[in-house]
Image 1: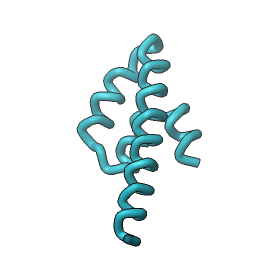
Image 2: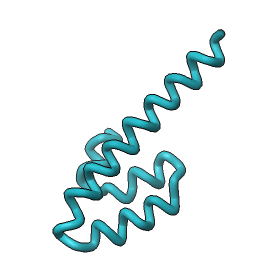
Image 3: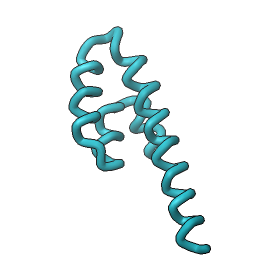
Length: 63
């Protein structure tokens, strides 16, 4: 579900992962039609990094 949000509403995905400042910057970028594609790519990348960091943190806590 987060991936779909990252593609269609990129700025909102930053707020879901707790990065408000980047969400505001992404919203400004997204306001232009040309900036929508880079904003979506940036949001998908940030979401994947968030998921990776979360998995690494969980693995370290289990040790």
